[in-house]
Length: 424
Image 1 (cartoon, rainbow, N blue to C red):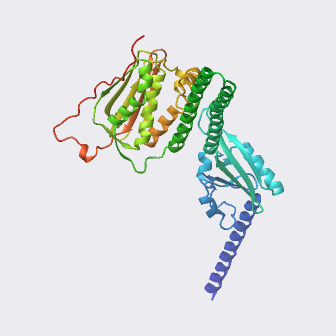
Image 2: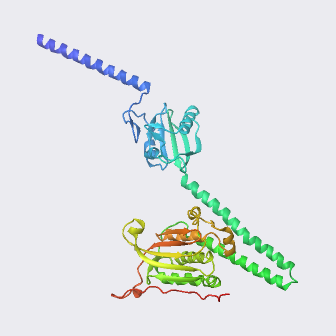
Image 3: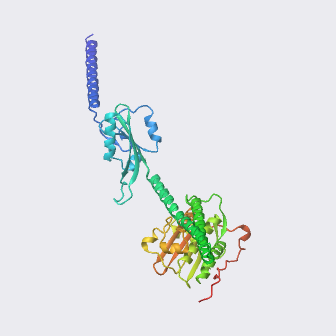
């Protein structure tokens, strides 16, 4: 009996010790939670799972599918939850919000419970100070009684597109007003000079020039609208490079003959591209036309074609590219202008553009056509010596009926000379 009594006493003492230990641990846990001290953080989640304050039901799931950067802040501005995009954008560092404006908005929302929205410009993470800032839209809202939700959406690309659209509309309006205004004034001049046949003929000729310029501008705006999204061709077809060159030369034959400019075509014959024939013809025609318009009289414009490796040219997977280069002996392009010649309505020499009827859209169309066909366009130029514009496009296969028989080779293109005007 004494043994049983001793065992019972020992069990009672052990149970009392366990109970006291559990009570102390429970009280310590309650005290720590009341203090709100949240220790170690997790890079992707803010607080460790054991230390997270509870989120309202479903919030975690919603945050995981949002496109915006999401940050959930606790009562002490500590990061409870943060999406990986918030870290990538530099909004959260080391488990804390790194942008003072966001903290200020969150604190104001926590005080009065009002939803706030603001647009900010933030520096790009890891970029130089001169780099374009990020344009973001910030929305801050209370999440329950203790938490604050911060949503940040990157609007940089949308703002850039809107700026381009505004500039395009403004430039189009300006460019259209010039020939339309000229036509209006010339029509009044014709009416006032009805008794002078020579003046009527002279004004009518000017009206024809302005009408042609207006028609060219409208057509190039239409062409640009078709290719400016840079999407790859949906239903491409084989396009013979020789035919594109012949069409480009024929398009500029009259202007070249008037200035006694020789147009020479050389290189590999029988090459084919895969794409939209109309767009490719417009792109090459614009390059040749620019070369003729910006070259002095009695000079030479050369068109050369060759086949190159895409690995060597672009550093991409090995494949074949068709390179078409157009070289002139014109006025050349300065270094500062070379970076902008492919912009819409940008003109290296505005006075020369007015004389030649240029719209400033030709090279922009070339750039977008090249992009939509999976290629590139580049320029080399020296002021006073001329320029070379180079199109590099993926090579295509000739139609079956046009493929050469085994053992035959393509002949080089012969020099092509437009009919020149007699020398003065």
